[in-house]
Amino acid sequence: MTLVKMPYSKKFINVSIPDKNLIKILESKAHNYKPELSQEKIVHRALNNPIKSKSLEELVRGKNNVVVITSDHTRPVPSKITMPIILQRIREVNPNIDIKILIATGYHRPTTKEEMINKFGEEIVKNEIIINHMSKNKDDLVKVGILPSGGELWLNKIAMEAEVLIAEGFIEPHFFAGFSGGRKSILPGIAGAETILANHCSEFISSKNARTGVLKNNPIHTDMLYAAKVSNLSFILNVVIDKDKKIINAFSGDSEFAHAKGCNFVKDLSKVDNVKADIVVTSNGGYPLDQNIYQSVKGMTSAEACCKQDGIIIMVCACNDGHGGQSFYDQMANAATPKEILNKVLKIPRNKTIPDQWEFQILARILNKYKVIMVTDMCDPQMIKNMHMDHAYSFEEALNKALKLKGENAEVVIIPDGVSVVVK
Image 1: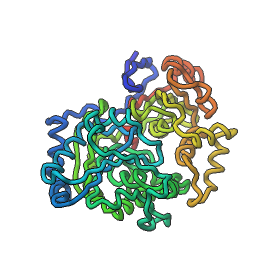
Image 2: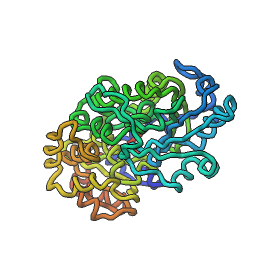
Image 3: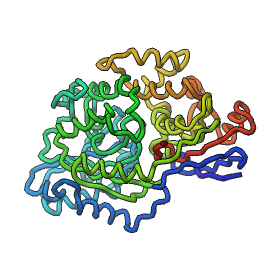
Image 4: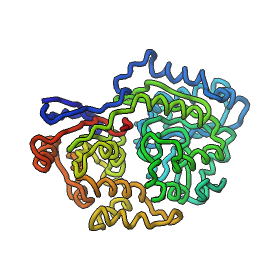
């Protein structure tokens, strides 16, 4: 038997696979990458060497105000390390500057105070001005242009009124934007609901270029780049993290060029072979990305790339926060089959995109070809079954179900962290 540690919520669980079945473990090299410097020193090194940009200090010197965009509660950005450094360096050259921290919630719910404390630490939450972006509050938005795809670009008014706009984030493979980080702080991060919906339309999601690790000719990425430029995003700090959510590298400077350099670093570490199997086991990387079914679709796409026809995906994902989106759940639960969902969504025009459409479109794409068994003891099994998936309380139960369906000699591939790899 081979024992593999799988991230699950805020811990790891051990899964055992018979040696006769296991053919490959696919893992990002980032998980075993050993940086020479501490996390803090890595961040300072990046800020001391901005890419195609003035330094952070030069940008804020003499200015009256700055807005710092940060990711929300669904992203494992190590803000307890990065944010104090950003604030310190700004105030060292401009002690009286007005600073606002804007949480890029995109289309998600607001981040709670408890989640803010978990993300930033009590001191920052107590002493700083922190604002949740609200994509559906039209009074909080301003129209700043037309996207290359033709949609109206509405962005957060506070960000657009800032003298200096900067963003922190992290870079990992992303299942339709190619990579996270960089321009995503603006779109979808601080964009209006209508803008986000248009950018995430079925036409773009079904594009062969809207895939993990792909930026070239990716229509979603093209819109996002434009949004970052029009917003006058002056500076980014993007980090790369390992399986323990520790910083292993960081990139700062111009929102396009610093991000591109970071993406190349991540791609080199995260590329894995496309090994086809009857059963593919994966996860969503643990907390915070495995809090709900909505987010779990990301990890499933890595397994999708390795599944043989009519294969089985075993998804180890806590989903303690439930489905993650009412529209997402309703669209899945109210359809007779995943194929029905696909047929319906592909007929929806770009300007009529509905909430969570991109997520149920991708999940339906996966379920139309493969069976998914969700492993969790933190979520209502009936909810999972209503969404056309199977449920197991333990990995052992899921594997037994899969082997009964595919045979005792079925080949198994394990991707311990599905959101960290680019399957080639």
